[in-house]
Length: 280
Image (cartoon, one colour):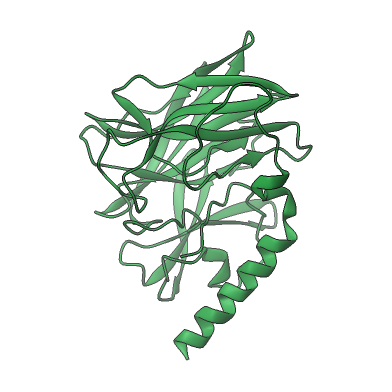
């Protein structure tokens, strides 16, 4: 029975992915001038108007963590806006330990930012946000690195989670060894940590599924759902008065290989254009 359910859910995902043709690589903007080496996944994020795209380039093997299924990470970030290339090359002490950049106007200035998972070979992963400033792709704001190598994080949501007119970035730090949900906001050109809660997880080691979170609306509020640490329940959180508040728990065995929205009937689920998933 479980096998049939998994096949059925995979079928639903294929139908969903097929309907989103704008996300297929052969229809996306290609670099107009220079030649860049893509990652094996060749995932590209775009805005709604298909005028901005972002992808990781420059495959490197200098970091051997392999948390996403192989030991190939990215050494560069390529953004194309209105057919103009913007390129950022990392120092050799860093990699993008990620599958696809995320596009979101996190500071609400009308310009897109590019949210990445950047890793220090010495201090582990952090949330790094890039932006085109004065005609150049530059680091805009960032979180602190976790602190030691071979420690990773996975972004859970980018949204105005408390409906106060400001965008929050939520991520789960060390989702494999006792995860902590953290939430931060851009403030004065910095990424300020606001609150955190332990006991959650949104990834399994070597999985290409980075889509184990869901945001829903409830009246005028939003709720963020993520698996608990052992992946045998879903926990709902509300961000209110600068605090994460645990709301409800759904007992359910989570398959970490499938997006969370495919495993439970969430009411009033918000579409997440930064849901990153490669079927296994």
